[in-house]
Length: 185
Image (cartoon, rainbow, N blue to C red; front, side, top):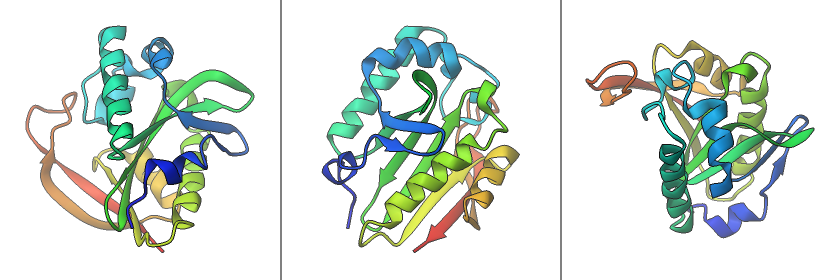
């Protein structure tokens, strides 16, 4: 059973001990640009280029909102619970019939504090509560050791390697491998 926006919206915003995760809004563009979309260190292993203007971030957010309307992908802002106006990253859910792929990104200032793991664990617990979902997957670059560590802490297991399947513009103009981690129900 494919997860729909109606199912997901019943649980959003999602609260954790330190985080509030909510649906993105166009008004988030300035904060996201300032916080991480313009940071080359943060975007070094992403599948999208570092943003050079707020307009790029606005276009990205509009693309995300369009995907949400079609139930193709659900992008959410990760905010600090104690300061909900402080956006520190994003979390993405991409559903298929019986699998969900997740992705996440955090501003550099918030790395190595367990916040990514907290967000991943909370969403995985929620997603696994939906009937018909068999597997949650995450794709990462083989050199992204921090993301690999987050996934392992969140109970994901290495699944397989996808050779030359994605371009990571900050790393190379040629397709790079991805490694896939899975969490099964």
